Image: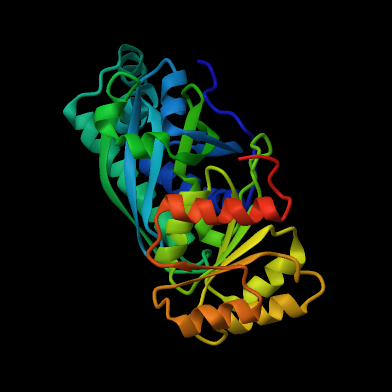
Length: 334
């Protein structure tokens, strides 16, 4: 089978997911009554559409809803052959019968129910392991399992989900006595980056610039990332003090910040950025849902280059950013 993955990358997300493998291997070994190994993890950036389209096989996809602070879905993906093997092991079938059913693609209702129970257990393992390792509260919940291939993927998943850039962690799965397979975890790139407020590098992708968004509203930060991440490298933080640290660590081409934030408001933060010789040339756009004349004047006096009214449209945000990046000689063209 052709490997459908491309664009090698790495991140704290990969390290954190890999750290859950010992628990998964131990517990899955108990579930299947077989030695169970996960090895050779590789994290790639692609889309689910590309992943499924390039693979000449059928998959079983388990959907894990991501709840509490983070929002989205994580997917566990196995080939139909691997799903039959695992489901049949949970049904305590003989190894020879399992191999025969897997070879023929026999995924009956009992096997499907057993595999669903397996994915529910894996969901619980990941939930227990990730909860203390992520900076904000997380809860995973299995919402269903479904057969998926390139013929039916457009009915199983929405166009938005299929074409959204995602992070795919592919791992060699070895169950003693059976052929090696792949254990695949997939999450939206936006959600994966949100786990640790990190930008997961895709070295093959060309960005127009790096944007730092500062806002105490995580909903607004998600909106900004969703709008901009196809064209820009986007860093986000809900902590104004962290913004000052990020500005010192690497090149930031433009800052987009809210005006009202607890502790350190946008006007004060803007003034501090402009007083620092390492960051005083970076253009700053201040945003507010309260566009009073006083706020606009304060923002400009503090050193902001522009003012953006919330809620803003995608077109308006990109127009503002492109305008000031061009003026700052970051973009060669638009």
